[in-house]
Amino acid sequence: MDITIIGAAILDVLAQPVDKEVFETGSWPVEDLQMNIGGDGANEALVLVGLGKRVQLQTVLGPDLAGRMILARLRERGVSIEDSCVQEDMVTGINTVLIQKDGERCFLTNPKGSLRRLSLEHIRMPFPRDTRILCLASIFVSPLLGVKELETIFAQAKKQGITVCADLTKRKNGETARDMAPALRYIDYLLPNAEEAKLLTGEKTVEEAARVLQECGVTHVVVKCGSRGCYVLEEKTGYWIPPEHPVNCIDTTGAGDSFAGGFLAALLEGKDIRECARFANQCGGKAVSCVGAASWLE
Image (tube, rainbow, N blue to C red):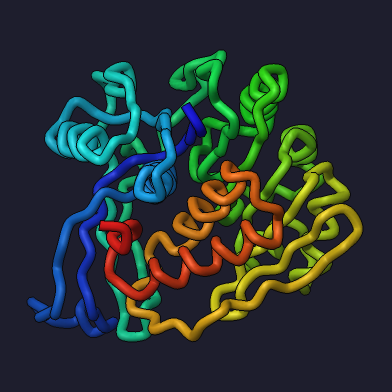
C-alpha cells in the first residue's frame, strides 16, 4: 500500500448556484443538483487513486443506505477499505452543500453522524507494512481524535518508518499550536490553509503562522492560499509557489483535499517539495473548475 489515509467518508449533496434568498422562498431552481462521495478522507483517497496510487482508507460508516453507497463506490474506484469500518451504532454523515455564484459554499451537516464519530478504536494499527505515507486528512474534523490520540497514531507511524502528513481544518475549541505540539512534532508535512493556520497560531500573516507551526515541531509547512498558490516553509527557508495558470472557480468544495492529494502523489514519486507544491497547485486549480470534490479526475 503506497499510502494510508485516515479521515471522513460521507455523501455530499451539491446544489449550484444558490443565493441566500433560498431561505426566504419555498423553492429555488438550480442549474446543477448532484450527489457525490465527500469527506476529507474519501476525497484525498479518490484523488490519489485517480492519480494511479495504491490507497487504503481508514474511516467509519453506518450500516445504512448512504454507508453502503459510499463503500461500494470507493471500492469501485480502487480504494482499499475494510468491512470493519461499518459500525452498527453509526449513522453515515450526509452534507448538503449550497454553492454560491462565486464558487464559495455553505454546508448543512449532521454533527451526530459519522463525520464526527471517528475515534482511536476505529484506527487499525500497526499500519500495512508497505505503507510509505500516513496522512490524517484533517486535524479537528474528528473531535474524538484529540492531541493524545493523534500522538498515538503518529508515533506508531514513525515507529514503522512511515512519513507522516496531515491536513487541517478550523480549530473547534480554541486550541492553539502550542496545545497541539505533542502531536505536531511527529508531522513531516502539514498542509493547512491560510485561515486555519492563522487561527491556530494566532498570527496575522501566513509566513508568521508557518513559522510558529514549525517551532511547534512540524518539519515542513505548506499553506494553501487559494488564488495566490501556496507558501512553503522548509527548515529556515520560506517561499511562495504561485499558480501557473489562472483558474475559473466554479466550486471550491474539496479543493484543499485535491491539493493535498496532489502533494502526496508527487511526494510518493520522490519529487522535491517545490515540485510537490507546484503539482498540488495544479490539482487544486482543476478541482475548483468543476462541481464536486474529486470529479475532475472522472
